[in-house]
Length: 143
Image 1 (cartoon, rainbow, N blue to C red):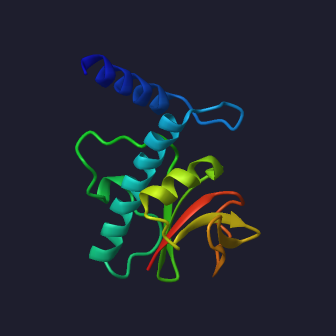
Image 2 (cartoon, helix red, strand yellow):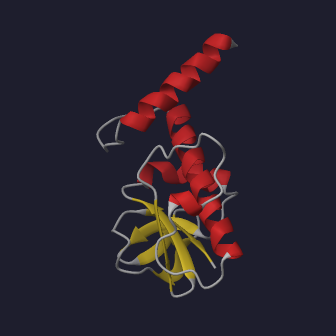
Image 3 (cartoon, one colour):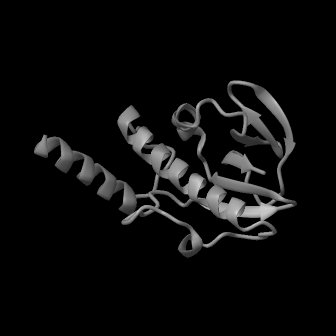
């Protein structure tokens, strides 16, 4: 059990210091860990947005209620625009299956494809995304 905990710790530690370039092949466990880290971040941004109506712009990480010791594994970003909270990660295509699973196949998760939120499960979700979200980003929305 101790060896397993040490292995998980080392994987998480390596993910903190290494970017997630597209040309590396991460195994399913790695992607689940990274996705869980993003989902926790997304949940904290959604909670802050719910508790603070009228929020606009970026929600700073220091303002969120994150679990003790939380460190973002990736370059998670968020912004509130037009009364909608967008949490997103650049080049998050490989994370989407794990994020969808952890968010119970939510219809508020997808990829930015040509400025629209598109789910691999449900297709075009009918939401035009703001221009600040780069093409190909994994995006979650919260109203």
